[in-house]
Image (cartoon, rainbow, N blue to C red; front, side):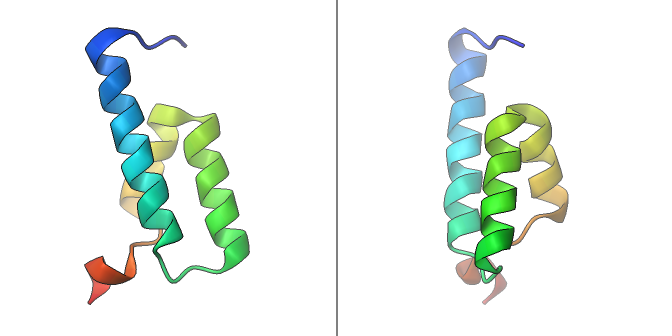
Length: 62
């Protein structure tokens, strides 16, 4: 699947946001690695799955 132009930039920005939130979460190291791999391997689907089921950053839960 190829992303080009403005849509690609949006997907990239959302994935970066997801990865930053994953690293800032209270999940275990293994969980962080698995969530990060999911978001990197499946950019759109991985982001959607993370958005609904993934770990949240410590700032979001406080």
